[in-house]
Amino acid sequence: GSSMPSNATYRCNNWNHGLDYCQYPSEKLKKELNGMMPSKHINILILGETGVGKSTWSNGFANYLRYDNIDEALATNEPISLIPSSFTYTDDDYNNTTINVGKESDNENHSVGQSATQTPRDYSFPMDDVIINLIDTPGIGDSRGIEQDKENFDNILSHVSYYKEIHAICILMKPNNSRLTVLFRFCIQELLVHLHRDAIRNIFFCFTNARTNFYAPGDTLPALKKELRDNNIDIELSKQNIFCFDNESFRFLACVENGLKFDEKTKRTYSDSWDIAIKESLRLVNQAKSLTPHKILDTLSLNNARKTILELCKPVAEIAVIIQKNTKRISDHKEIIRLDKKAMKDFSKRLLWSGLDIVRIELGHPRTVCTQGDCVETIAVGADNVKQTNYKQHCHPRCGLPGIPSETVGDSRLQSCAAMDRSVDPIECKECGHSYMLHMHMTYQLIIINKDFVFPEVQEQIKKKEKSTDRDSALIPLL
Image (cartoon, rainbow, N blue to C red):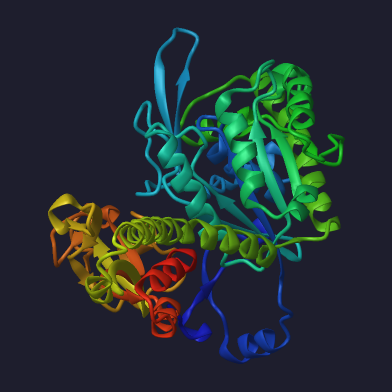
């Protein structure tokens, strides 16, 4: 949406000026707006396994860059909470207290055993003369399975396509894993499959919960080096792309804001951790500024080519089947000619032979169809009764949503299709009553038809031959 600047209220980024929002004098506002220069944006993509602490890290990162020390953060009584999250605090008597950070959001699932972040989302905050944009993503190793991980990666690529460039790709890890999990390997491999090779220089490895490991990568570093080496990934690990944080100082801040009390010794411990986190956060931002940003267009071009190849696989396979069937029919017809030398009069009736052909009809626009069993039919075609799937339920014959890959079931952007009823949860189709996750876009139709074929060379040779024996001998070499 949009609004006139004169209708808005404003608050200074300097916490010393208070937390109230105030109306700006119109003439002064006009002068200030005319003198404003566009802010530079630093775009940071955050990736990592489920449970590594991406949401807590993002909240802490914003606070470390905002407040010079933990006392300043405590004095504001309003810590920055970009992403809603929660955790359990256990006191000395082993009593548990649930600590909530920020306001609840339908994008964050705090159920035990479930992946927290559901879809990619942007969180922005100012830092001096730049705007930091954190792109939070669902965790790798989603509790719903490997297919959900693949869908999450597709959603991430779709989401970052709205950016022109990415300055840093932060992969969050824990510092005490001597063996990298299958899920982490999947994360690295999927990331490099989908990203342009130039993005390697913008990859950072950020280690969370590093205070217990002397603010170092620990046992994870040798395993990470081996994984990169074994997969011929040209990333040289060094101080320029390794950063170590501890989120406990932000958790301490959240506990205090939730009314818990701590002694001065405990506060000093987390104060030191906060100071180290500030240095690492500034070092990360400065390193991101110094690098040439990764152009998202390069990655999108790579993935568009990859998607085009995948989309062509099915039509090419169907064409190959048709070619094989036609080849067999030609071979059978040659055999008929060889055996039927004494029946040339009948053969003239068989110059036309019936084969199969395929017709691809381009729609020129996306069509939303349903893939649920009740909305499709299987049709047997051809002499061998080959099974073909016909998507008979056209929920939105001319869908105007751009950018959705063809034949990809359940793309999250289909929620915005005009055929979908967004007033119900979960979202379902108004035409067929099935979930949007069972729908996809089609941009063409494949129609298999019967077609008569003629051998023009055979017909010409028959006209030239006067004797039946000469006609028969001329036919077989030509077929």
